[in-house]
Image (cartoon, rainbow, N blue to C red):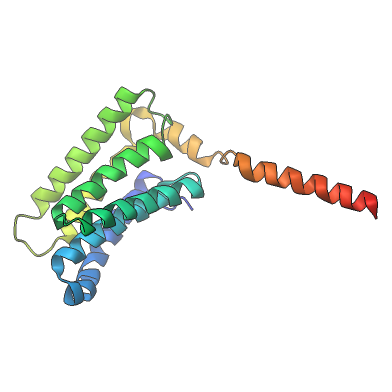
Length: 194
């Protein structure tokens, strides 16, 4: 877990996503078309990124699943590949600052919103600059977008605070903790009757 939660790791993720796209496009694009390959790859890359930066596995999985489900829903209602890719980008920002890192180094809604708007805007702008309309190497678009997202771990002097927050063990899940305690009580009670 947390294999993408630092500046350096995020840079490596950006490179891997860019390098893997041509292979994915060749495999999926041949069967379903290049637009569907682009849209599905954008959703998968966003979901993997969210899962990779999560401090808590359950939250990371929830963010990844929600991203994939929403992008799939957009595909069903007939959204274009660009619209799905844009939605995946927005989900990265919403889930990253809202669910995964809400409050960790970015105090207040206004600051989090500003950081995410800047990162997403710069990432999308860089993706568009690196891949002119009609150009085949869309892997550069993925590289540019996730390259800009790496800045999340450097902004505002919060890198050290986020690193400390990420290194802290996640708070135990209240439901799981209650179940554990109930099992202990039942075990003690069962041993007391024997």
